[in-house]
Amino acid sequence: MGAGQLNNRQYGKGIALMLLHLAGLYVAIAKLPHAVWALVTLGETSARLEKVGKVYQQVIGDHSIYLLVEGLIMIFLMFLLLAVYVLNIRDAYRCARLREEGMPLHTFRQTLHFLLDYRFPQIAIAIPVLGILFFTVMPIVFMILLAFTDFTRSHMPPAQLINWHGLETFRDIFRLRVWSETFYGVTLWTLLWAVASTLTCFAAGFVIALAVQQKDIRFKKFWRTIFILPYAIPLFVSTLILRNVFNGQFGPVNDYLELMGFGRVPWLSDPEWAKLTLVLVNMLLGFPVIMLMIIGVLSTIPGDMYEAADIDGADGLQKLRLITFPTVMYTMMPILIMQFVANINNFNVIYLLTGGNPVNGNYQFAGHTDILITWLYKLSMEQGQYNFASVIGIFIFVLLSGFAVWSIRRTKSFKEERL
Image (cartoon, rainbow, N blue to C red):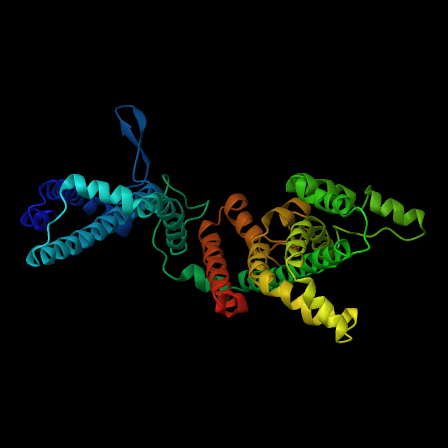
């Protein structure tokens, strides 16, 4: 790097790129072979005790996880250096063509001024992009690689080395009944939960927004404030309070039911009731933000449309079906798709309200109300099944990213480029 710039008599830029090239060569020669070795072998020497004289001493061996992370960081740095090298070639070729056409080239100082004046947005975006690369993309790649290892709590470095396991973990998920039954059952409930929670939040928010926006409703600001209060309270506080409210033994809901002559309901201890309670609680916590969004959409609908509908003899239901609902859905559909995706990963409500319970004896480390993300948490943080947790993480990523891209591209707002 830099040779083309020096040939174009851009000495400042050429020297800077050549110094970067030398630094990259040093890193590639000194660090890259060890990084490749680390990724391929994941270490060759485990920690052990060796007798030195009459005393046993701990000998530190290779740590497979550290080696995997170190190798990934080095590979990512090499790709960045390669990207800079490609840009360097393009810059040298472009400047050489300008020289052949007799046009003057920028000096190093002029290049810096040009970058600050005309390329500042790209420079500003490059910083968070690098952050995303190293703190989002690289952990995702790390998680994917763990799925191909035998990394579990019973097989953990530095006492033991991790080995590449190929597709064995993926095969176990679908081949072993104890894992496959859990996977299919939890996945089915996850999808049902996402659909039910998204639709109930939207329906409740839509109905309340319509009621609040009626012309003959008084104290509209008061009602908006009352309905938004659940959203203003921290989610984990509201969820913990509602867990006590729906407690089957001493919860106030069951106490009131008994006073009215009804029996006590196992809100959180029965599998079906627990799932129904989760959907209900999520609706109570989630409808305020949907209500506010829909109120904003309703306020943008021109009154002339309703007046024209009145002249044509349309009743309230027809105006709702032909004007209000299509307008709301035009704006809200991308948001609903994102809410569906978020509900698939809605860890807080599930874990804080039921913890995945009641227990399911046929499931492997999962309860009746566990969704994929809470099952992943239990597999990794509680059971130490890191390779199986990585497989679940890959499945969630593929499912959500594919669905989100496919769904949003089919919405009317995206097709008309107004998203």
